Image 1 (spheres, rainbow, N blue to C red):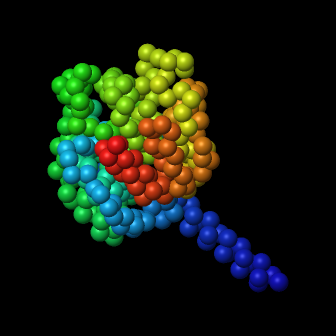
Image 2: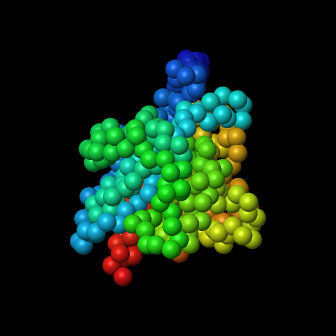
Image 3: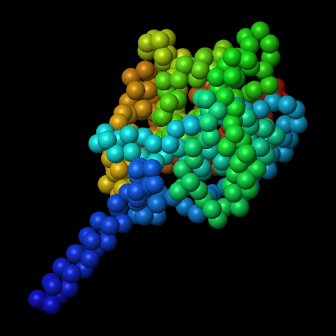
Length: 304
């Protein structure tokens, strides 16, 4: 019995030591932290569930999607440490594949035209479809358009637009710079008036907060909407496995809820939801279905 207890104690000690070291966030060259080896293993995958959906009557015209990405890398957490983030590649690229296959091109902008920041540690490098589209759009990711220029020169209330939707991809980077961006505020309100679709996945809905600048709950355009989004409660748990180097500096779900938005999912799962022309998804697990929902909604729009 004594030998068994000693063996068990040694096993538990080794397990604790392994957990401790594998759950430490990984330091980056710029002084921030990317997810720990344990978090990478648990929360990312080298492939996706892309299902090769074929759209029978793809769009052959000039209608397209405007994707607004983050140009900021590091999020300062509540403890002062910096999380190396950006847009999540699966949440961004997998839906792009479906939109492209449905016949819709995608224009990419960041607030000032700086390169799109991507969570490369989450890139599914063994997924040939994702990697092929990443290669196709790499030049645009590195040299996107300026949201400020789009707002100044491409938004017109009196003429028809070539754009069918605005796309806000996920990743914690969506919470950096976009929720307080005045140009995004103008874009969201313009797209709403033009009756365009709004697409947002995971942390992407945090950027919808830009529409609340100079507005209260009663005038917030998404007051009364239901969405799928990454739950605040899950963000509270992820530091335990070293996904982030500390707790979140603020909670986007809480802020949206205070503005009258209802988040329908409690887990970071494959939940997707359509409420009027707002299409949302809960996490990377929802990216495939989210992309198909968005593509089919846009096809229905152009085929009216």
